Image (cartoon, rainbow, N blue to C red; front, side, top):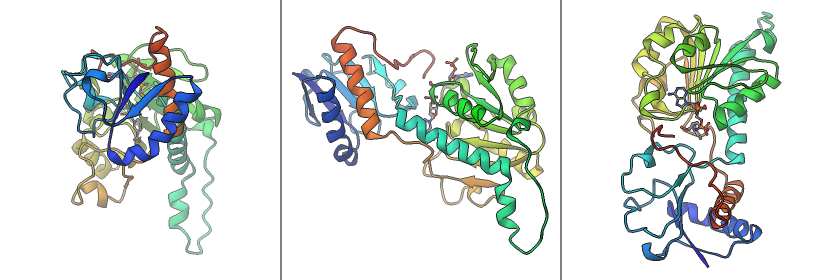
Amino acid sequence: MINVLFSAKDTNWDEYSPALRKAFTKAGLDCDLSRDHSPETTDYIIYAPSSALQDFTPYKRCKAVLSLWAGVEKIVSNKTLTQPLCRMVDPGLTQGMVEWVTGHTLRYHLGIDANLAAQDGSWVQNVPPLASERPVTVLGLGQLGQACAATLASLGFNVTGWSRRPKSIPVITCEHGPDGLTQALNSAEILITLLPNTPATESTMNAETLAQLPKGARIINPGRGTLIDDTALLNALNTGHIAHATLDVFRQEPLPADNPYWTHPNVTVTPHIAADTRASTAAQVIAENIHRAESNQPLHHLVDRSAGY
Ligand code: NAP
């Protein structure tokens, strides 16, 4: 029997426990899934940082901690967590992000806001350009950035991507490292930020890098609030250098009611809803990883603690 501790918010239990049990059975795993396993008997921990468990020291038998979240910035800094840590890569979450990013990109590309604002009898024809005439840049070419970039490219957008290490991806112009960032920003009429929150990505978009975007660029940030220097973005929005921003994530969440983003005419705030882990698909990913560990195969989606993601 494999003892799997579920350590997340109580409200997650009702949704995840049936999906996990089903996935364990399908994977041929004999698991006892519980919220109450003692540290001495726990083999795996399914984990969200919002749970009460913060000290992993007593979990000496635990073979892996399996995060329910894609972003692991709240877990990597926990010094008591010495067990292998896997982040969530969930096809359902990825699909959600692709749909959210594509929708907001098309909103900008087609000028949908201008049409909605012009229902006044005026007949002004501004035909949008084709996607191939619209340069879009995606910062971050990981699971989510690559999926979004590929979908936008399949719609015909002229897509550039930027990552830490060099990459070669068909139909996407790939840039990397500090030097590649300027190149990636120079042409970006629509910028999508899908980097993780690490010390190295703090304020990737600041006064200097915002100035490298063409005048009138739009920004879509479903990555993390820390990727953007808020004061610099508000300044760039106020001067019109940045025409509009759609922000899903913030340095403080929920975004306080008096935050200027709420009332800025050129900002759309969404409440961290771009993509959520979906229990049915995530359960299969977790079961697959436990199966791998039990059969001495390398774990999928291991976090690189030194890089922080
Ligand atoms: P991932 O697979 O770990 O990919 C991260 C990407 O960022 C990689 O391409 C990586 O480069 C690049 N990167 C990291 N540090 C960098 C640096 N210093 N300079 C340049 N590039 C750097 O992550 P993911 O699964 O795509 O997720 C990305 C982020 O989305 C998560 O960390 C999370 O913050 C956010 N997210 C948001 C929501 C939401 O609902 N809003 C939902 C899920 C996730 P390499 O390829 O070279 O490693």
